[in-house]
Image 1 (cartoon, rainbow over the protein chains, first blue to last red):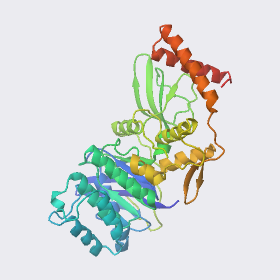
Image 2 (cartoon, chains in turn yellow, cyan):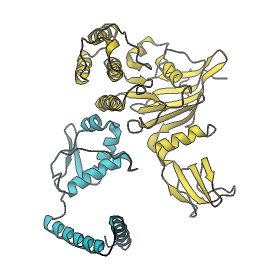
Image 3 (tube, rainbow over the protein chains, first blue to last red):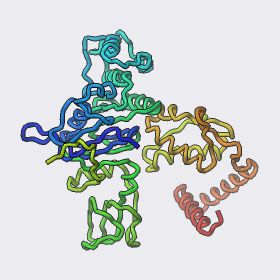
Length: 302
Length: 130
């Protein structure tokens, strides 16, 4: 399987402040990725690096096998919707589509008009008077009509009410079902994304904390409950992410590759939200794949 | 055609909920042999879930021999699939209702009855009866 995006030792520094560091991720083609983390964790920086709007201070980004920012042709393959969906307020929706048609070499006008029609948006309406949900649909339509191979959406759900969220995700998943599209959605809430995503990246305090396919992550984490553990190891457990104790009992969130071998411990499955919150609450714990060398020409990070 | 719905608090994985709903519909005779399941695009368009989740559910049903995928056409309930014979089904249901009436008369409430049923189901499975 090929990768849509590989970051190798990527870091971005603004003056003395690192917005993102030691970022190693590898997103396989065709995934829908949840990029999750608290505000200020580096999500927007990572998306801007992927789109080529920023260059890394150290490390290498490879997007669809090319280097963002350096390769102008790559822009046609990336759809990017920034936070708050910046659009020209005085344009009508129709003008916005026409603008898209003229500024993109590859533009699917049928797809754009069909999507706008299906979202029940009037082509004559001014962009400035759209509701948050309509604005998000127009932004998504402009990005999709480019027929991108990688779609980057920065906090697309943040300003939407529950109904608009649902409609947005329904139409986005419809496009993913159509064909070869990798999507990265950032959010500070995992609950919004749990059902639509199959790959997870958790950023915390400028670092990647968790990265991998969601099925695999859920399968390799367990809650185990047993007699109070006096510092002894539980057989079968790889590492302990989180632990809490009463005078009799210990509850551990563990990462493991196989079954828990100790019969005194009862196992429970874990939900995605619980997993993410546990890691965010314990910034030292990580669940990351081995760093992968992007290319032979990769710059060595210090 | 059936329509899927997801229960947000069930704790059951999304793909398994889809699998259970198809099995249930076949068992109750809502889906007949030859019926088509909703396409992946239809399911994701209504439930807002990842297309791979639907594919995973349909693959599992295919492995079970309950449905078959016809490339480029869709996924269909297989001809060889049969629900329980209807006569037998109705008789079993009547005897279960009789049992429930007895249970309620004996002072059990719905939760007690369910717990008793679950325990008996578990026991007979372990004994290899079911």
